[in-house]
Image (cartoon, rainbow, N blue to C red; front, side):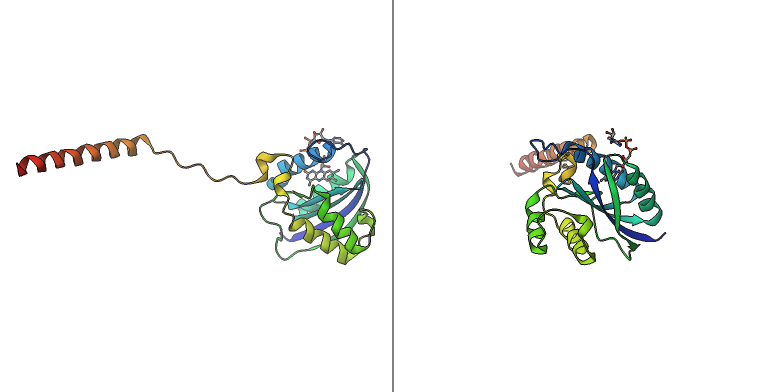
Length: 189
Ligand code: FAD
């Protein structure tokens, strides 16, 4: 199956209400749903929410991306969904993440300043600005500030516990070694 990439802009229908963690609760729910669903469909990408607008980028099998996009377009939490990119892709450019999120406005604020934009308005993004936005999400180093911290970083694998069989073997080896020492000592005297 062919891979594709898709990006769109949309406008939130809810009024933003930031929480202590800084992630708008509606956006937090969308992210949790995305992280639950997207890996099963082999979808990766990123989401940015700012100034009451969304920018989402998706990569995956053509059918999976388009099916999800049809669902997303019907979602009442946003409207005026405008496709910015929908084209074939040679290979995936997002790795390890089902849905990256750029929760800290700083990087995006700097990005907008560079573009001479006063607010986050993905509807006005031309191709070049779209690519830069995707790159910004791809390179975001803020993954540890995701709302679901347990998903944020793969933790180091716990050390494998020593099995009871191995433990018994070690004890036996110790006893045998001790016996050899004792026997050796007796032979010397
Ligand atoms: P459900 O279990 O049906 O719902 C998941 C959660 O979302 C529940 O808490 C439910 O109450 C809530 N919810 C669902 N629809 C609404 C609604 N219309 N209004 C308020 N709350 C609602 N889904 C993905 O799977 N992957 C994505 O990448 C993705 N990106 C999205 C980006 C945007 C900007 C938006 C607005 C939505 C996105 N969604 C995404 C959500 C998508 O539109 C569907 O709601 C979701 O895919 C349904 O999946 P589900 O049946 O597993 O979720």
